[in-house]
Image 1 (tube, rainbow, N blue to C red):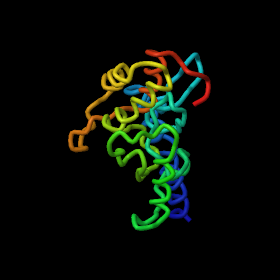
Image 2 (image 1 turned 45 degrees about the vertical axis):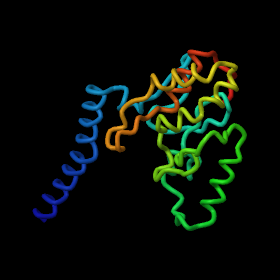
Image 3 (image 1 turned 30 degrees about the horizontal axis):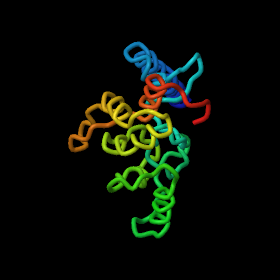
Length: 189
């Protein structure tokens, strides 16, 4: 009986330590050291949360930078790829549909990331090359010079780290900066 009581006490102590104390300490530490990141890197505009810098969102209007396609419909609760083989005809069909979207230009080869989904389906960045490819469409929709849009996008590019020196642009941050620089084209995305 004594062993049973010791086992029960140990179980509840372990449960309390591992399920309550440890997570609470990590939460406090994260919010103390990096409060913005710990809260999801949320971005507010006029007191309303418009998105997160860490999770891609769908932008379809021509006046905005488009993210990579998402096999999960930009749903953070369903993160993942399509699990389709590269040889599956559905991949080519999806790429053809994306290439036929209004606003896609025939100015040189389309960066692959604009027609191929990522493994997570939620990458918040595109390469600088993919962002600059979209500059003429964005400029035409906003009624400004393509060079001005390209310059603003280039200012926002950051080192991508281990991606063979690729410079990355956060899509949400770029779209907010474009609104700031050239005016907001409307309330919809």
